[in-house]
Length: 161
Ligand code: ADP
Ligand code: MG
Image (tube, rainbow, N blue to C red; front, side):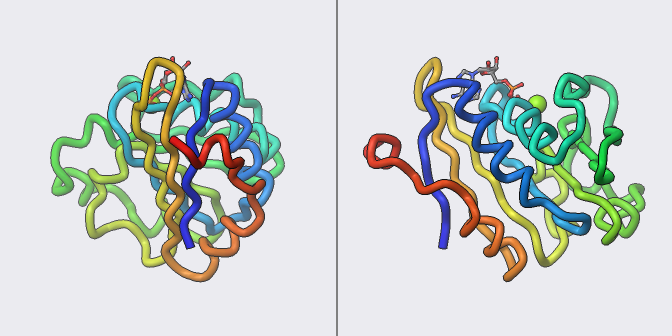
């Protein structure tokens, strides 16, 4: 089962992220795929809010590869943009990043290639028009599947795009 919708504003994307964030527990990994400006960071701001962290701290890291946000649950935000080719990630402590004690959100997840864990939620964002983004959530593993069933149903309006 996949979740497939179109949002009409940054706020709608954040609201979907918030609904997802409310369900996340330590050990969950969410991997984001999509071009620059697709809305990955915007979605993650909503996730942070849903997790109970301070969403204002979430920014597109420029030279920062990894950030941890204070809050009720340990939340790690990784941006792989500057990792040139998936080979460059091999120096990272992958077991630490994908460990069971943290919620991990990864932008430019394609950079991680085969290093992504077996269970994760794939989030694909695509530019439709200035304010519209197609967002697909594709679960890998039973834990990720359960996350999708807890989301608000896709409206017929969004499904038409
Ligand atoms: P990324 O992290 O994928 O590079 P950002 O989230 O940093 O993208 O930027 C997305 C930009 O697009 C923001 O300026 C945001 O306000 C704008 N935007 C417009 N419509 C949407 C939408 N429906 N969903 C997400 N962002 C949107
Ligand atoms: Mg970003």
